[in-house]
Amino acid sequence: MLYALLALMAPLWDRTAAQGEATDTSAARFLVVVATALFAILAILVVDLHRDELHALGLVGGAEQISAIFMSP
Image 1 (cartoon, rainbow, N blue to C red):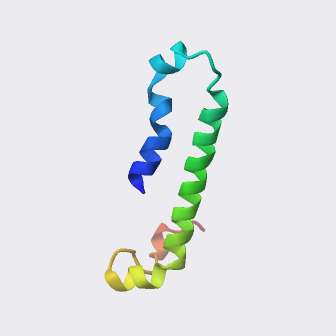
Image 2 (cartoon, rainbow, N blue to C red):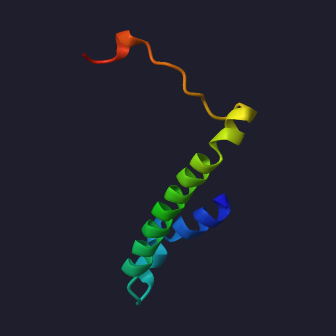
């Protein structure tokens, strides 16, 4: 999944090839940004959905109580 995300973001890094092309790539860059944002939202939702399983594996922190000294009045 990471390789697919990097492949989507590759045109953003390759500015020399984009300048030499006759076509406009601004729409493609906008689509890359939108796809990256949707990927991040999906990742957050998947972690939230499987929080109990991840907590059982020790990959996600639990709901430990915050000390009252760190809370604002």
